[in-house]
Image (tube, rainbow, N blue to C red; front, side, top):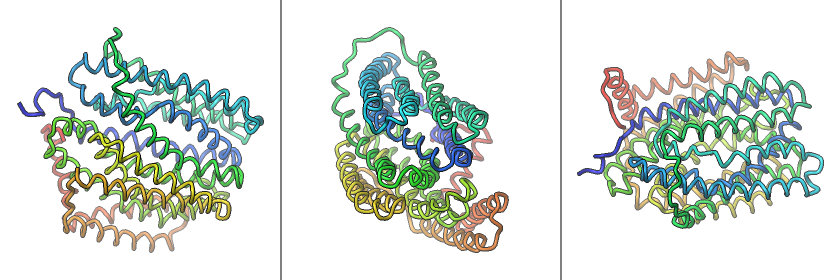
Length: 491
């Protein structure tokens, strides 16, 4: 029997559409919400809330252990059998529950006793709601089951309601506590719905569980996640310490745009992770490499022009989104723009390939080296160069991590881009870049004309891909035609 028999396979392409749609919402929400509150709370208020979220996220990340990644793979391996997935879910859920209780206790002792938080304890107590509800954050289960439709619809509703609440209640700099509370409530709605729905997929009767088997891989992933998040959030903490909360706002506003862009791009490939894990478990390396090749080409097809567009229009986008008081964010966005490409590459070679293959050790090694590099560079650059130093440190550290992930995964993955594909993407991107630079120089800096510039650049890129007969675009068109004709495909 082939490895595909007996498995209820879901369409990766359709899951990619749902996940991309959800990530579009996730991309727009922080940008639109931040653009709104940036004018209401001003840099000081935005910086205070961002700093509080950064602190609580340290505890959330420890409480979550490595489950957001490990849980997807574990559930994917047993997704066909209700008894096995019930047992796996209960084991991982109880591990997460124990770690969350420990971290909740530590967090509230931390923020309510240390003098550093004495003037902002109410804010930190509110953002702590996110940590309390971490135990019910089980998106990893639905991702392992390849139920991206559920995640997409639920998340979209929560994001829309959260934004409406922000517009209704956040009106002045004094409303920063309301803003923090609404963000935390959004997490609550997401996670509570998760648990209510999970009964459809797992049994409620407690099984004889074995937590020990999960400890080692979870701890390895936790160490990797901690190392990664430390250097992703340490810059925020150090900026606040050396230069105050305003520089945090300048830096994080640009980082949000970059992160949103990157998340949107990888959302297209995220649904292949459960399937790749399942293929590797069953030693079906031919199908795993075929799927990885297809989606890696799709990632770079979008990532390359995204970097060019972000960097070339930063001086226009930042003031439009956040106001003229945030002009110091423009240089940060230009520096951080390269991370869209770097993060996409790291996700492909690290999260999908090495993690699916169970090679958590090499992910940890690469991440720790990146964290150490980032800490050293932050210490050297932030005191003198403020948010710009933090941006340079982040890019440098991520490049180190990505090169190491490529080195470790080269024996597992066999990607062939081909000269025609590379020529198509690079030539199309170059023509688009010239058009953007030309248009950016004379078009008025208004919202309407900026949208015209962005849409025009995307159309130019698309036309060039068609003219250069890009293989990925042709395959996408073919699949769309088949879908319209009613032909079902699993990939």
